[in-house]
Length: 520
Image (cartoon, rainbow, N blue to C red; front, side, top):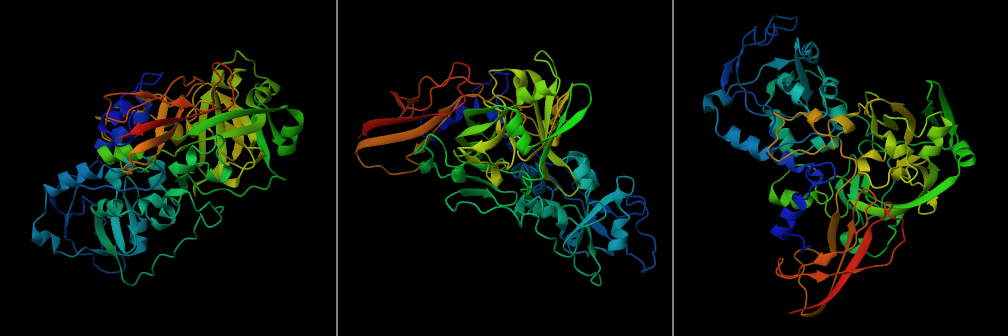
């Protein structure tokens, strides 16, 4: 492998195929050419038919018909909001409206009038601050699904953007402005600031590199990653999709659907008492690991993970297989195991994912209902009191704060299973993407990164120690790491550092390595 920042290395990384034939490390690379569905850039006359009778005289006085600019733009509400801002900006720049059109004032509305536009039949309007937006033509394109954006239909975006704080970025706001159709009456009271749904999140270690505060997503600094085979709990990378729930272990119970339709509950103590404890050392990696290097080629407008969206820990808990056998399932049963978490948004939608039944029931799969991490109770950020650990599989399937386990013929319908964590080619856009044509990412391909020295670091002539990690999903063992110091002209075999000895096809942990070499 080559030093991070080398173009050849990046191309090698991006083109590496996975077991299922798609480039899973390109999960977000395809986003770089995505553009929001745009309205035709034009100056349109506002007419009653265009806005479905909005312009009638309704109690508060006449609303003047004005002109508007239907600029190419888009912004939304919900999870997974992804903006190919560069492509959009280029299109919008080619269609600058006449200066006279821009100078015309927007019509003024009351919140009551905005509230009448709460579905596609009446047009979908939302407010943000004192502005009114018609986002009807964006509803079907919303990456988080139309159900999420329709939660705000006829009302304010603020309560939802408080939950999905990734929207509070300038490029999102600029795109939203393109959908502006009016302004709120000055007589309307300002929208109350919603309570911060993240106010009760746990404290975090100050050394973490924060990529997103709400929800919290952070990684350890690279220089600390190779210092320990087991990543300390406080430095283990954190990937949250929603606010961290607060769960009382004394009243916690896990719902399990039985093979014959019956459901039963297990308390934390019952899980520990009735099922033998099993331990497994496994690395976990976010599908977006190293996206910062992708963004250096072309911005994806997604979380700019460095090399730290991966960590290694010793997990303890009950085998999922044992629990499913107790529930009446057979090792030969087909289907998918659904996991739902306790973390949820305002609509009650919870984080969910699924894995194939054959992985769950495989004695060598070592899937856990884990309650321990590195010999301690799970930290709150990592799923306390119970989470799923699926060794060798992308982190998105390792559901935290586990609420229920059930078995079904098909995959989980969760947004994160159906409309996220899938891989496409870079030519796919939001206008052409068909999520049904790509499988949900499960196992990951081989991954390796240099943690020291950092990119752009200046080193003195003489002895140089290069450190890093390597990991391969699916239980496959890393047998060698090669390092180039001269852009691929020559290669040096790194030393694999001692770690836990693991069985063939069950090598779940990462492999730390280092290279001591002289440099001119």
